[in-house]
Image 1 (cartoon, helix red, strand yellow):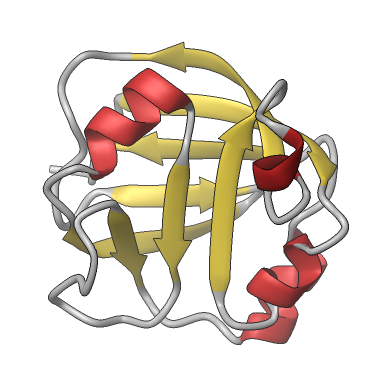
Image 2 (tube, one colour):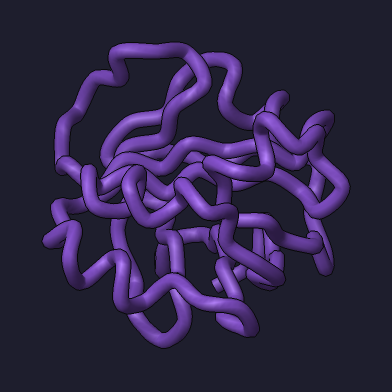
Length: 128
């Protein structure tokens, strides 16, 4: 599977757990303004390509993988330009907001346990 985007979690803002508890993984690159950093999972990108992910591609969170079910029209631009992403683990096939990426359902408690500094997040092409 070809890598689309690879990043590593560096820190969690004080309000990040609340969002994770709602099944939302909100990413901002380290150095984000304080009002955004406090609600975010802060990360440092390692590599990225120009072409965006597609529905059916995968998001690896540590060793676990989740299929992308929907992608908002502005989501990839936000990732590339701002280092910002909103991943929602709800399994829905149509996004509510243009900056969101939806993935297979994951229990919010499990999501909260998986997200910690040092964990890598990777968007990658689905196996053909």
